[in-house]
Image 1 (cartoon, rainbow, N blue to C red):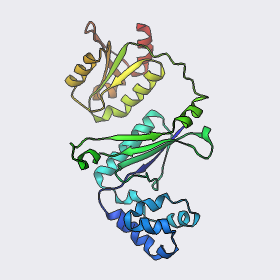
Image 2: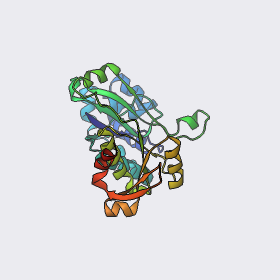
Image 3: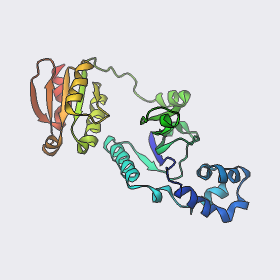
Image 4: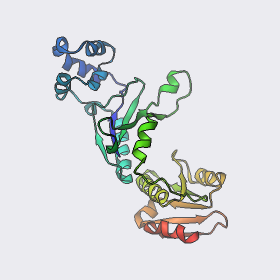
Length: 258
């Protein structure tokens, strides 16, 4: 399964304007549907399935040239996390979702087991949607999936995993540890252990409170010092005992407790 990423509709109109300037000389050659989109939302033309338009758009401006510094850093971070998790992906600057409220990252997850119709799901971020509808500003991400396609793709996947009941909570301190956290999370879950982590980047006090709230029996803590030393702190939340272990021995340590 591969993960294909593109960029959502930008807040600034600069890219739309540049795209319209590029398409304007070819407007009379575009399909009727694309001419309608030219005025309403020219970015939707990037999703064309017409061969002539696909070839034409190969020379069009790309959205990656119009990112703000903040958006560019955010998108770089998304790619760093995918690489840390070992998720193969391709960057498609023409990937467009069918709804106009997306911001920043949009994505499709595809599978080689499905033939030409290879998309399992697609979606993206829409951080401003709740606020636009009159609510609070709430970061959000979502997707739509085809259940039948997922079931077909699952035929050759091991679904007999038996996840351990005891919960483990992964605590990270600082942005530098986030890629390593995701790698730990992925490896521990693949080893069939129940691990959760904080995605909101809260303080260690708040994360420890959350670990106790969900009834975790073990907390694994990693900060800048541990990252440098390639270690983690393991805390038994039942008796408060804590020790340091090498980061590559986390799974064997947990297995030794069961």
